[in-house]
Length: 274
Ligand SMILES: Nc1ncnc2c1ncn2[C@@H]1O[C@H](COP(=O)(O)OP(=O)(O)OP(=O)(O)O)[C@@H](O)[C@H]1O
Image 1 (tube, rainbow, N blue to C red):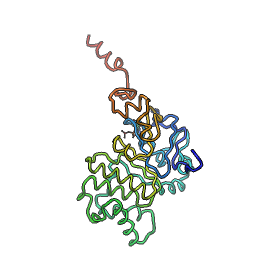
Image 2 (tube, rainbow, N blue to C red):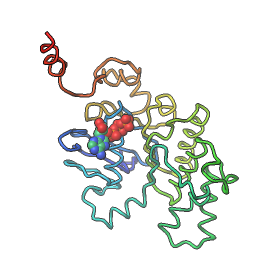
Image 3 (tube, helix red, strand yellow):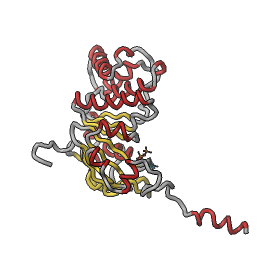
Image 4 (cartoon, rainbow, N blue to C red):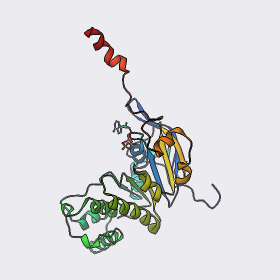
C-alpha cells in the first residue's frame, strides 16, 4: 500500500471460525478497500455469508481480528457495536420488505427506528433514497403491488436510508430476470460511486459481479483462493479459482458434502444381503 492509498475500511486478519466442530474459515485474511465495490465469491457453503456476519458482529471470530475502520468488531462492547452497525447497511438475500407497510414507509422504517428526525424530514430522506433507486413514483404502493426487481430496489433504498459507509449485499441478484439483474447491478455500482460507499457484494453471478467490481475475493477451502482486480482473478492459474471462474463441475471443490465413506454407508447392508 502506498502513502496515498487509504487504509481498507474492512480487514480480516488471520480469522478462524466454525459452527460447533465444523471449521468454516481457517486463517483467513482479506481486505475491503474504501469507496470500492468488492465482490466476495466462491463455492456454495464456502463461508461468504459467514464473513458478512463476522463483519456485522452477528458472529465473533474464534481467532484473528475483524477490523472495521481499524477497530476489532469481535472485541466491541454492545455500545460500540451498535455504533459500528449504524455505519453499515445490510441487504440480505431476498431482503424482505414489511408487507403491511407502503414502499415509502419501508424505506422510512430505519430512520424512524434510529433517528429523532421529524416526520417531514423522514419523508424527504426516504423520498430521496427512493429517487436514487428510480422508485419515487412508487412510494404509495404496497409490496404486494410491485415486482421482485422493484422490491429489491426498495430494499436497497432502505439499506442506504441511514447513509451507511459500508453496504453489504448478500446475493442481491438472486431470482431476478436478466434485465432487473442488470439494473440492480448498475445501481449498486452507481450508488457506490455517487455516495462514496464501500460495498461488499456476495453473488454467484460471475459476469455481472465481475463487471461492477473493483476488487474480487474468491473464498475456497476456508481461506482466500485469490484476491485482486477482476482481470487478475480471471487470469489466476490456481485450480480452485479456475474451477470457479470457468464454472467447471469437477476440480478441487468437491461435488459431495463431507460424510461417511461409501464403504461405511453401504457395505454392511450389502454384506448382510449376501
Ligand atoms: N447457524 C449455523 N449453524 C451451523 N452451520 C451453519 C450456520 N450457518 C451456516 N452454516 C454452515 O456453514 C457453512 C458456510 O455457510 P455460509 O452461509 O457462510 O456459506 P456461503 O458461502 O454464504 O454459501 P451460499 O453461497 O450457499 O449462500 C455451510 O456449510 C453452512 O451449512
